[in-house]
Length: 281
Image 1 (tube, rainbow, N blue to C red):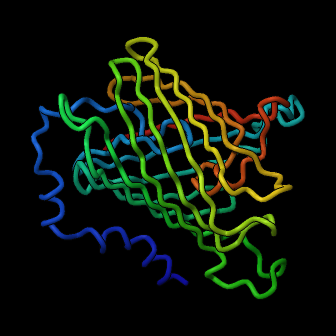
Image 2 (image 1 turned 90 degrees about the vertical axis):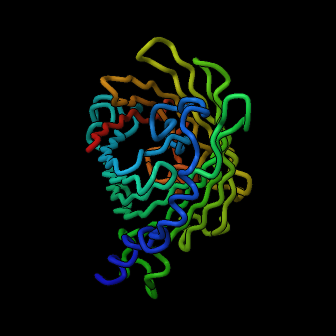
């Protein structure tokens, strides 16, 4: 098992270790491109097209409280909080790798993000980034699920992130997404699932912006207890860093989680407050 975990964490490094690929992707002139459409690596839940720069190392702490609906009983979700720790490294300006661990379902995750095209002044109109993840659900219990195998713990995600910066204040992003869980909580749900995500950022002031994202699930099973994730947040830029505050109907922070296992309902006040803190090294 230890060897499998080590292989899982090193896969992105082994796949993209060749200097030829890095030089090919990074060979463009920086001055011709528009500034980033988003300031944070996440819009709210969904990945943005922002990349970690070459040789930069990000440590991101994400915290998501329980439902506000619980009121004082659980101190508005404080007693049911989950945390995600994420390490992201820029192999180049166009290739990022990461590993994370979330207390929700005790998830371990490996990520790979590659910028395929960049919005250019008077040229190509979009920034396009591919985002892929492999996760391991270590919370599954062999005593509860007889015959459980390691492969049942695995899940996968692949996304195409397409953003456009319309002006200094407004940016929008489209996120067609495929994800697959080898084990699903709802038996009628197909393991392979499809989502169209939309998101955006509107700058309110020099430091503040309003963000939102939403995932339209295309093949959710009839009778499923899960809902489409809708999230609203605020980004605060402080000295080159971004502090993100948000409200969402999805407590999980892994992509497979918030797309496939959101349980909240904005209409009932069953929403979750959270924040992201990042440190650059």
